[in-house]
Length: 375
Image 1 (tube, rainbow, N blue to C red):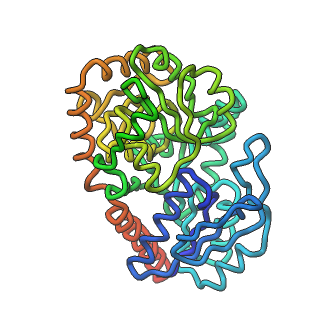
Image 2 (spheres, helix red, strand yellow):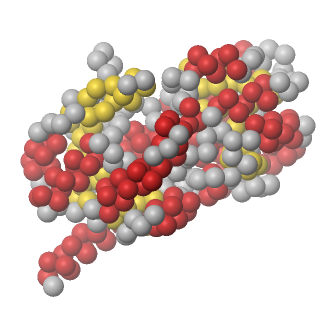
């Protein structure tokens, strides 16, 4: 099968869209298929991902104003040329917003089936950054995804949102996790002594530092005696967060085995953002054997079994986050039980397993197109 993956982000970018696109390309190659990736060009001076498993075509891009880590693709003939030259059987649109919309239009013009993967809560971002615009965001989502042969939602909450707002032909497709990389035995006692020299309980957040992530909700946990908050990631909110999270350790961006070592060296993981369509870092924390605290909204509802693998708290509630951390800090047995149950829950959620599900979705779409033509 010849697949063109049109993605709004790709490594060296570090985010859920980029990671999922990379894992999709790797799995397609592993299964004998022929993918090509089309993505915005990375920032000048950054190095493209050396581990890319297939050709990557970069289109010109500019930084998003106010958030330079995000690149927005500019109009380019490279996209249409790649779809035509690769003789694509299917176009995979990863979180279509700008480049993906153009990819959808080119696929329609060339008669190529398109599978759109919903990964970004644009409506939630509209509320966060503009205080309004949610209705306009849903109109755009309906327009983009309604043109696809199939839309894949990463969680049951996302699937409900899409269908409730009139997006047709939606199926569930979750995300995988690398259980070989993220595992409890990567725990590093030397790192723990560095992060918490007085033996504090180490509570970590991993992710982008941006307004929609609401990392400031960890302020209450920073005030708990015997607790050290560790923040991994980067973004425009970092300077402000360093002011409102007293005593927290900021490690910056970490990737690969280094990130896995940090995860396994935590005692608990907290995610604060209420707009997650899936929340990959929760899966990575569970694979690392950690108890998880997360908002009872979006993707975490599918991932965290409250009272068995972690604690779900009301979204945007700093007191609830603090109280959940306090409860875990007070009970080592509970932390251990949650961690063991979490690891067992995700062990079967490999990228190979979910990648095969994706190939099945491609095959279903192609079969539907053939049936339509025959009719």
